[in-house]
Image (tube, rainbow, N blue to C red; front, side, top):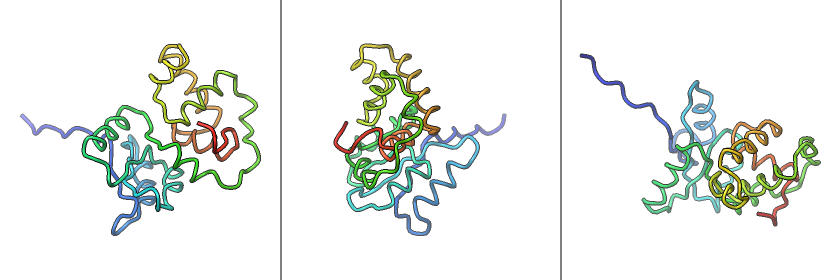
Length: 174
């Protein structure tokens, strides 16, 4: 018999301020790979000017360096399950600067997609959104997929950044 192949890497923890290569460059290199694992960035967040760039580079979420072990484990499980891990207040702060003109895809959203988008921006999971809107998780997944396509976003993180920077959600919302 041969040696067992190791399990594929599902989540990579990246230090936002790595000692040799910064977290943004590392994130870009990881997500560019075929079958790339998801990227969870470790950050101090309050003072980390790199977070917005890491989102744009493809990070799937963030966890504070001071997080307790159980919080870190929960963050890894959340990202591994395919959800993004966002801190809505921090995302608002990062992208809440001067607005570009309204995103062109805004006019193509249905009323329900706008509701789902607002809840995604608040950091709710598909299951939480389903419970809030009294619909099935599969229905939420369909709405999120439509939102991703309309926004041209690769994942929920990119969708939230596009929604804030495109003026669909104001900093006080969510």
